[in-house]
Length: 122
Image (cartoon, rainbow, N blue to C red; front, side, top):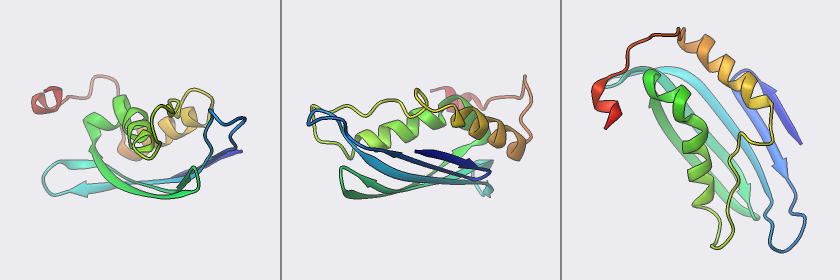
């Protein structure tokens, strides 16, 4: 099951076999002004992975959020899985992330050609 509402995504997956994994995650996000980085998005991912609680928060600056927010969310989710299980990229099976991407673009007023801070490229 997956649902999108502006500022919130809920995604649930039930393991298909013992090599698979299950999760029930809520991802909430909002545009905020960070004193050091400026405008960006604060994320809160909470719920469970394999029945264990997950509660992760992080901030990405405006020039970092759109190219990498799904990668960061996926890496944080992977940290909650025991090897050798691999957490799939959150974006792969869910078209609702297209809506999330557009919602973030709108919230941050992102336009093609917006500048990127050189220190964020390192």
